[in-house]
Amino acid sequence: MTEANVTTESGDDLKPPISQTGIIGWARHNLFNGWFNSVLTILILVAAWQLIPPIINWVFIDSVWNTTGAACQEVKGACWSVIPANLRLVVFGFYPAELQWRPLLAMIMLISLLLYSKNRNNWGKRLLIIWLFGLFLMGVLMRGGMFGLEPVESAKWSGLPLTLMLSFFGMVAAYPLGVVLALGRRSNLMGIRSLCVVYIEMIRGVPLISLLFMSSIMFPLFLPKDLNIDKILRAQVAIIIFAAAYIAEVVRGGLQAIDKGQYEAAESIGLNYYQTMRLVILPQALKIVIPPTVGILISTFKDTSLVVIIALYDMLNTSKSVLSNPEWMGSSSEVYIFVALIYFVFCYLMSSYSRRLEEELEYKTTD
Image (cartoon, rainbow, N blue to C red; front, side, top):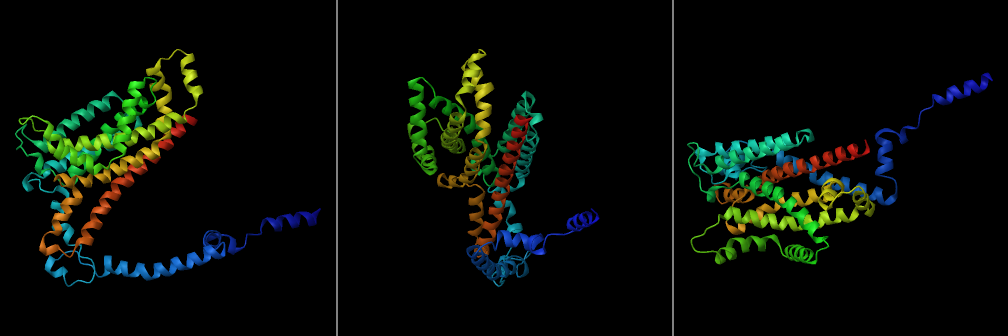
């Protein structure tokens, strides 16, 4: 009896071998768990050894942060001086320099509203009123002409404010339109279903650049001579109708994933079509399609750079105007890296919020 106890106690004190735990165990299990993975890991390590040190030298060690464009020609590393020297042009574009505090304040208001809206406890009629009031103030700040603000024509709206405006308002307007199109495509009324199918398939069958071209060049030809619709508004409409077609197909997939028993259960308690969709079907379907929907919204955010075809200069195209300056012509990599980081930050925040929202909705459903 005593010997058994001694054996058990000594067995409890035994630890797994070092080769199976910690970093070594993780590496053996994930990187060297077979000849193919072992060879692939070694090749990647060799490539990283060859590539990473030169990149670090170029970005940090041999780079300069505060010098002129002429001095950058003799520098081996990156010339980050191009960013602070042209930051206003990249961010605000051709908006008058003395009035750039207005688009800056408008962007701060927009980001503040988005942060406030992240909390689902704030969703309601009050949030809608706050958004409407905020959008009105942002429009006044950008255009001027009220409250003693100097008017600024929309042709000078460019840079990051234009990118945020086209992408955000495009997303907000395209999403409900896409939901309506998805419902229309599944309608029992042949006329409505046919119209939605034609719209969705036609829009998805052409690139966004063709819609922008049509909105800028062809559409004004069908208008009276005295009627002139703002170019930014035309581009905004093109982005909305393009994104809505893709969102419609994503939402339709979510609607098809809902079991038929949900419809029957709603009908059994006396709900009409509108109540069934609003209270039973759409909440489940829209939760299912959060990941692909966010993918479309991120793609829309990046596709705003295509507005250059109709002479609108978003953030990417204002950065190109920096490179047209002979003083900074050799600093294209630095400028594009800076712009890419801005795009990455916004896209990552959208993706991160979608994952958190999906987890919250899943927890609420389970609870």
